[in-house]
Length: 309
Ligand code: AFP
Image (cartoon, rainbow, N blue to C red; front, side, top):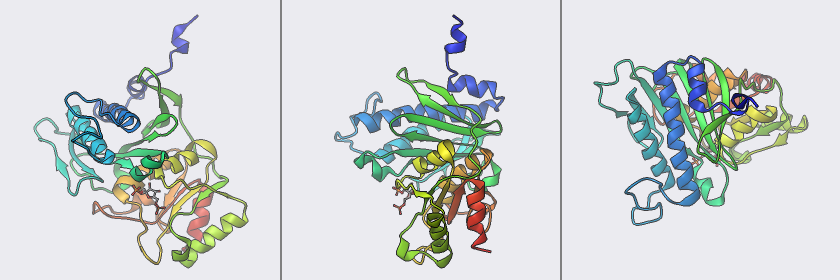
């Protein structure tokens, strides 16, 4: 028996074979390492880190704060990251510069949907990676993006110049390749409406009505990562979080949620718009910047943008 044929490809092996620059590969890999600690902490309440009390001990910390610290530490460990911004931090964090010339900058949401952990729903880590010293750039400038989905399985999806690929964490603590060169279906059967119906603006109300009349099924977990993952990996469809009468820019945050997911979905053949322009074309100038979003299968995104013309 040729054991090679049966040994699934690990994350580092895949990164090396994909020709991705070593610094970028090490960032993606180290976020994967961090996610194992986050996964462990989430499922056991134990940090799994030497010298720290368990999550619910005297050093009790919210899981998203713990996740943020773990990811920040692993990004620093790469020696290739010069600046980071995290949804958990209020300003840009600068790592000492001497070892990071020609490095990368990273924007991440350490645990998106963290309030769902208490009711055992899936949550995720979302990461956008840029070359150079500026983590606040238009999404089109990303050189890579990834997410980790903490669900019934813990999966890691990354995309760089070489397509979008999924890895699953096995019982040995390895991320092994489970899907390669993923493509979003041109047209789907599900939609996520976002927001509260009474606050919808007319255009969004019409889009939701059309999708319902066309027989699309509503799928909305309250977690951006699992909802996007379902569209990416299962049958396509449309995720929306609109501008509303209460929030003219919607809820989701451009640097940490929308740019990385738009990068991955476009790389997989889908589309992402704010209703009028591609998400990746938007200027990104503030950590707290938000935007309406229509993301998923190309046909549905195109349909939605017609209502804003
Ligand atoms: P939290 O991180 O505050 O739980 O918000 C999660 C999120 O940003 C995104 O993951 C969901 O798609 C969206 O909010 C859900 O928002 P609503 O609760 O308003 O539907």
